[in-house]
Length: 163
Image 1 (spheres, one colour):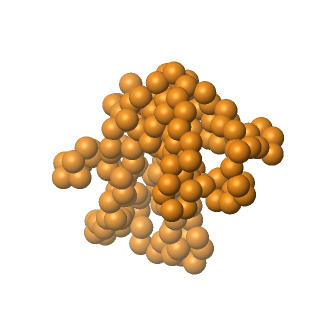
Image 2 (cartoon, helix red, strand yellow; image 1 turned 120 degrees about the vertical axis):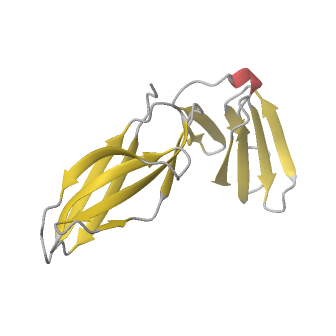
């Protein structure tokens, strides 16, 4: 099973005739599976907030929708939304000191095979390094830059950097 989950959140305002909501998931946005059912609060003039946590059976892209079922049997659907579970780590950027940045990850990728590219606003490559997660800005002028982190898996994350 996938270790990560996706959180579905929605809200309503005015539930005069609503009986319940069903959360549904699909791999192709054609064939849907009912995941759960949540009773409507039935508040006619107030906002109601709902949430449903789903742990899909595999990684990848999943589609979700909410089915609203009224007391009289009428049904309506929310717009379809996509969610993606990936094995790629989530990266974050931390400033260690005035001239040094550090890349952190939720799970350690193969840093030795990870490439770091720093570009200026015109797209000119200013720095390329591999394997080191600390990036020195000391030799660079003040300005705005883009730091691109290319993981061995092919996943790329881009950060805006102000120096």
